[in-house]
Length: 106
Length: 117
Image 1 (spheres, rainbow over the protein chains, first blue to last red):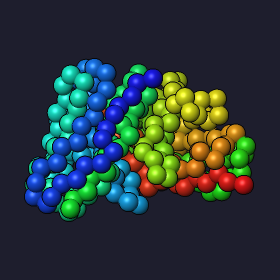
Image 2: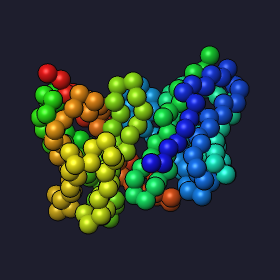
Image 3: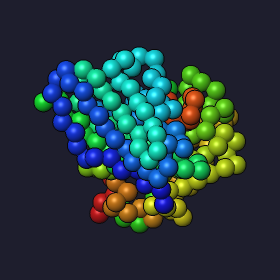
């Protein structure tokens, strides 16, 4: 079965840039989406179709996807960005999620 | 808006039926999904159902035990869960697959399923 691999945790200082990777076989041939989930809340998409940002999502969120790796980048990270982040891709009609990355803003 | 219901406590081997009521959009035009998050774990895509219900997929972890269905006349999505296991304990979300690239653009608030004796 298809797997997406994320680092379990990433730490960043306020104002710095955080990068979260998502690796999968030929992931660049698929669309990667990224979701943010805060405790007690439902997930929210922050990046879709590799690099597109939904309305209402701050410009500091950006994404890329090439080869076997998709990357979510948060520039000028703020305390409010502390959350779990998940990448997701479709394999046939199965939604595959990465294991999630806990972003800590120290 | 998506609103799940039907969660609760079930015994191992038991069953539960989850519902997801949709409003504010043309439900029949969207593929729908169930996703769960177990305590201390990440998101897991469980099932997919196409707009008319003719195409259905399941994750291996629930295949043969869970059945997804929808009633477009009632704007509702369902997940019938049988042979529940302790490891099925999770918050279950219904999610709409929409938008460019087919991302999950709307999620319900989730309903908690606890499987315990």
